[in-house]
Every structure is written in structure tokens, then in C-alpha cells.
Amino acid sequence: MAYTALYRKYRPATFSDVYGQEHITETLKSEIASEKTVHAYLFTGTRGTGKTTCAKVLAKAVNCLNSKDGDPCGECEMCKAIANDEITDICEIDAASNNGVDDIRSLREQVNFSPAAAKYRVYIIDEVHMLSPSAFNALLKTLEEPPKHVIFILATTEVHKLPATILSRCQRFDFRRIDAEKICDRIKYIAQKEGFSITDEALSLISAAADGGMRDALSILDLCASVTKDITEDTVVNVCAMAGNEYLITLAEAIKNKNTEEALMLIDKLHNSSVDMLRLLSELTSHYRNLMIAKTIKGTNLPIICSAKKLKAIKEQSEKYQLSEILSVLEILQATASKMLNGNHRTEMEMAIIRLCNPKLGNDIASLEARISALEANKTVAVKEPSTVPISEKPLKKNEPECEFENSQNTEIADITPAFEKESNGKIPQWEDILIVLKKTCPIIAGVLQGSSAYIEGERLLIDAKNEQFRSLINGETSTYRDAIRKAAFEVLGATYKLGPYKPKTAPQNDVDPLDSFKERINDLNI
Image (tube, rainbow, N blue to C red; front, side, top):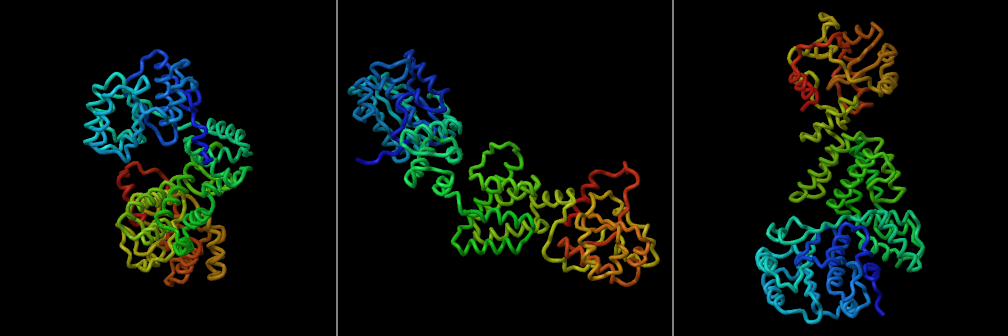
């Protein structure tokens, strides 16, 4: 005897057996019990939520010889004949393969005949959105003036594709995604009936992977049972191919650390392992979506489909990110998906990774937001290569001295441009690391800088030194000390900065135009 899939074996035979759609089944039962059925129904919703099942139960209920409160009895001759597909009056049509105008014209000819055995001739048209425009027009006439002995049940997952003229002639029912708890209860019941053992972790993972669809949940259970009768979380992970993508954590870690080389080498390794770049992009987008959810929702019941071990890793990694960073990454990844349609998949993927690791290279809104967020959070935007343009050749702002600390001996250090007087975002936590490097490369300046602190202001490294000797050393004619500080800063921070003194703002400047302030922020970001 041929094996019967679990979703078919346990398909509900009555409205009372349908899980998670009580708002629909109770209404249909009431209509049938009061004999107030309509001539056309529209069932819409995501796959596996019970549309076709309810359509078949409805076809059975309207023809049942002894219905019970709107439910088919399942015992009369008509119920048994319909259940065994022995009644020609119940006609199921797949619109995906029968979508032409000729198919609908043939249907229109059939509806004029009286039922052969049942009370109603019921037409269940599945995936009705697949009908051609001409077929819809042919169907419309029948829906407007159907014979009294005909009932149409239209089912679709894409109701927005149906013409308004069709929608207006049907009684519409929207099927919801089934609650995860109800899916777990149903799976547990069926597992017990079939003699399987299943852990609570496996139940939760199956219900999450099913995404609100009971049919998908039973299909996953079927696959797991074909492997073992003792179903665990690992069984579900292997069956659903949730394992084997640990590289997403590693890649996201490299992006967070702005490690371009590590990220590109991982992309190369995955490409050589025949991982499709479009698939990788989709997986990485899903991973950052999971980071976004983990960062936003602090509860334990997160809408993330993965094992408990993977969820723990996602939560830990989300703590290392700012939410603004995650959103910026998602915007770049989704923009890359559009570019991949016409470009080289590997090249587009690598370009996206380079932009993610080096926000200063991007000129899009996402990159701009990332750079502003990094500045406002006092985070250095890392660039893997120092600027090749000498500071003296960079364009100068209005009233900006030619060199910050290199003011020459004719200029007092206190007479700095007002641009330096802006209140800084906060101290650099890596300043102590810079001083450690200076102890090795330039002990003199390192000794003078003991007890000092530093701040980032746009492209400038502002130094707050307590030792007065620091001013004379930096203002000297030689650039040795200035270059030593720049090199040490680049080694630790990964970026080249101009040097300047830190001077706290002494009083609010109410006459500053907010627009000028914003322009200055943009200029500081070198955009």
C-alpha cells in the first residue's frame, strides 16, 4: 500500500477539525446551518493555512444529508462519496495549468447542467490569480448570474492580482497564519498518534520554520520521521538545512571590525566552494535582519527561525552593533541585490563588502548615515589605507590655518580657528593605545603626553595636553613629533587625521545658523 503523507492523512474532515481559522469556520458553519450560503466564496491567505481544506469541507457540508450545526456528518452516503472522490459534481480546477479563456468557456457550459447526484455542483478554482485577463472576463459573466445549483470557491495566495470586478462578486475570507502554539499542539498530537517521540525544542523549531502554515509543519515532521522516530532539535536543523551557514557570523564579525581583507578572503573561499553569490547575499541580508530583530526585541520569543545555539550567537553579535549600523548594512545589501540583476554577482558582492568595511568609500545615503552615526557615537571610521594626499595639498576651509599645530613660531597656539572650538563628541578610548605605540617610536613626545586625552572632530585629532612643553615641541619647525603622532594614530585607529589642540566651547553661540552647522558636519565627513 502506498504511503500517505501526514498532511493528507490528517487533513481536517470537518470545520471543527481546522486549526487556527475559527473566525472563518464559525461563520461558514453558521451560514450552512441557517441555509444562507452564497454563490461565490473567495479564500485568500498564505500557503498551507487551510484554504483548500476548508473549500473541500464546505463542498461536503453543503451537500451533506445530515449536517450537524453546519459541519458535515462524515457518515452519510454523500459525505463518504465526496471523501472518496466518487462524486463528479465536486470539480477542482488548477488555474495555474488551466488558465486560458477556453478553459473557462468550457466551465461555463458545464454549469448549466444540473448536479448528477449532489444538491450543489461546487467548483473549487485553486490559484485563481493565475487566470488570464480574457479568462477572468469569461468567468465574470458566470459569477454575475450563476445557476442556483452552482457554488464557486476561489482560492488564491495573491489576492491583489484579482480584478475588482471579481472581488466584488465574492464573499471574501482571509486566512491568517496559524499561531505557533497551535501548530505545536497539532504536531505533538500527530506525533503521538504515529508513535514518534519529539522534544519541545524540536516542536518550537518546526513551528517557526513552518511560518504559520500547518501543511508545511506536517511536511517537516514527515521528513524528520523518515530519518528517525526520536525527533530532536538537531534532526530538524539537519532536515531543514539550517546548519552549515556559520560563515555568516564570521562575515558579519569581519564587517563590524572593518576587516576588509578577512571579509574578501572569506568571500573568495565561499565562491571557490560553489556558493552562489546571490544566495550568499540573501543569506547575509537575512542574518542582518535577525540581528535587527535581536537588537530591537528584548524578549525570549523572537521571530527568528534557527536553533537555540544559533540564536544565542545572533544575540551576542547584535550586542556589538548599533541599530543604526545594522540598518545601514541592510540598505546597502538590498541595493546590491538590485545591482546584481544586471552585474557580475561576485564583483557586486565584493564591492558591497568593501563599502561595508569602509563607509568613507560610499557616496550613498546609507554610507552617509553610517559615517554620521560613527562620528556622533565617537567611533572612528576605519580605512585600511592611509590618505595618499599630503595634508598640505588638501583643500583648506575658509579661515583654516595651513597646518594645525604647524602654525610656525609667529602664531600663538591659542589663536586657533573657531572650527577647533566646537564641543567634541567625547574622548577616544584608544588614546592610551596610541600612547603605548609612541613610547616605542617617540619616547620624548610620549612622556610629554602622559595624562593627556584626545578627541575626534571630523578629520581632526584634537589633543588636550596638560604639559606646556607639548605646545613648544609641536609648534617647532621640525615635523618629527607631529609625524610620530600621526603614524601612531593611524596604526591604532586605521585612519589619517590632521592634528589640532582641543579647546572646549566656552559659551553657546546662538547666532550660528543651523544650516551652516549641518554643512560643516557634512564637510567634516569628507563627502
